[in-house]
Amino acid sequence: MVSVSQSQPQPQPRTQQLKKKMVDIDNDSLSDFLASAVDAAQKAGEIIRKGFYQTKHVEHKGQVDLVTETDKACEELIFNHLKQLYPTHKLIGEETTAACGTAELTDEPTWIVDPLDGTTNFVHGFPFVCVSIGLTIGKTPTIGVVYNPIINELFTGIRGKGAFLNGNPIKVSSETELMSSLLATEVGTKRDKETVDESTNRIKSLLFKVRSLRMSGSCALNLCGIACGRLDILFELGFGGPWDVAGGAVIVREAGGVVFDPSGADFDITSQRVAASNPFLKDALVDALRQMV
Image (cartoon, rainbow, N blue to C red):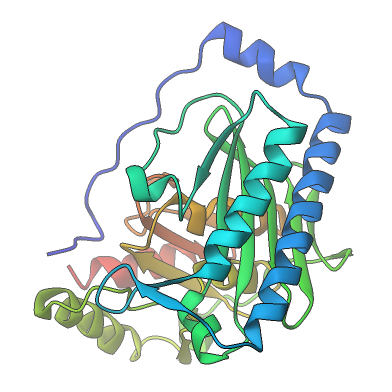
């Protein structure tokens, strides 16, 4: 059974060499990294926009988990773009890296890419799809770009520099009551009875404690919904990997929100567990999740 209270590994202390490396990455470099990620996301977005209105060639990664030729083409484009600009940086992507086993996240600058988050939405013509690109430095999410090319929304963030939607500053909601909150979650792609029962039981319990529930089909866009105040609270367990959250985590934090493990512990980008909210609702959400264990 999935437990929201399971303990999380503690982060390892950084070396002096790593600290010096991070100091050497100045604000101009971070701005350049963001611009490069935006350029890559917009180019991939063109592929998604064209493919959205065409017949899709779909493959199954699992019973309901899908991948299309568009996913693969977008990841190849993004990887090639970033490799040319930053040949020493590492790359982790959903369609290539994950297929060969999830790559280890190191302290080196690492681009973490979901070329098409919301593939099921894409296949069905539901317009909640996006490109998600995150850059970690010292395993810390530092740059975030999430782009929905169908409705033309570009979310961006740089650690310490704020979060933006189409160039305009955004911030999380100011809601303080759980009962008045809009919750986002997902049921995932596993369809075994135990997993489905756990998911539906959590949702049933939470529906008595929140105003309503949304499932957009995209973890990255759910996080951005928190960042711009459309959503108040979010939790997801067992999603695909760090590519689902690397970009959105930066954007939520820079919009004044908090990103954490559903148990209330520190967020671990590699754990396939995430929760997010405005600062006022974190404790109430954690308490509600703990009561379901």
